[in-house]
Length: 401
Image 1 (tube, rainbow, N blue to C red):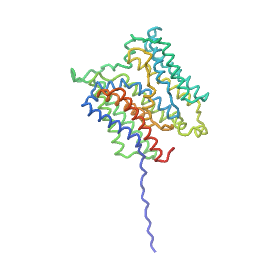
Image 2 (cartoon, one colour):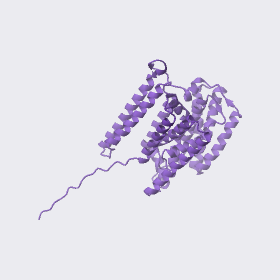
Image 3 (cartoon, one colour):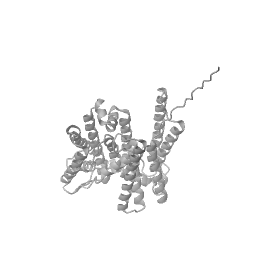
Image 4 (spheres, rainbow, N blue to C red):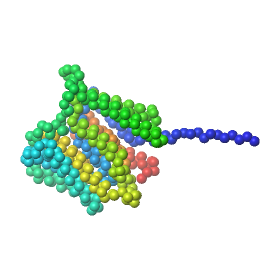
């Protein structure tokens, strides 16, 4: 009697791809291409790309902090008012207190962090829902802004301070060419270095996964994803080099994205934030000090709102009481469009940034097309609704909560 034994086929499990994240990137690409066609190529002109970055820097900064708040299962409605108040304090510090611009920046960041600590105390240690605390903060800090500015404005700020929101890196290496066709060499170099660094980091992470015998992404997907990223980086910096070079705020935002991506994915604090948003009770039973994590989440949000206040005031060239209106809605919309879950526990910094860029491209594209402001608000509202509906339906289909 003969027996045959079949060798079981060994199929390596496929790496689960984040279809939601890729879908958001695809949506951004479609929107950019659509408006590039509708505006006859004006959307991606060097000057418009520069304006897109500088005009939407506040949303990018706030979205980086807001995504952490939302992942943890909270919300912050006060950031727009904090932006206005911190902007007023920074302007007063320079014009009335006589502080140097860099000291005023430090003071503004400390004020923002202090505001975050104030709200974090009520949320974390008193137990008042963040919605209520930050709603009260929205009214409180807007009122303080009106008191500080007495209904007026403060202008004539130092040019070094204004450069934070509306300046460019100096032409350290000169330019390629002359006249209107010249390009800033430093900006081109930044693009090449950023591209090489991205590939190096990704390859290092891939080698580490293989060394630990972990599942790795397929080669085709890996190189396609990174190839597209490199093309985008080089194209972006190439276009910026044709205007006035690299905006200072672009460097600040890029640094924030790298830092907070590391914090959320590579640190204990980041893991605790995801754990709390996913299942608060389980996180508490696992020993996570949820009160302190919540406290520092709001301290961080306050500090980033302070930075957004500095950037907004610097770009405007002065402090006004109406600054920051609806900034909280823009940041929250960017986070949800970027893939964060309404129920918490899900979200990424990159997703929030892509969501902010989608909002920014919509604003700029519709403005170039001279679409009425009322219709712009309507379209953005529909985009937000569809993004959240997609998240809810996806969870329902997969059997999630």
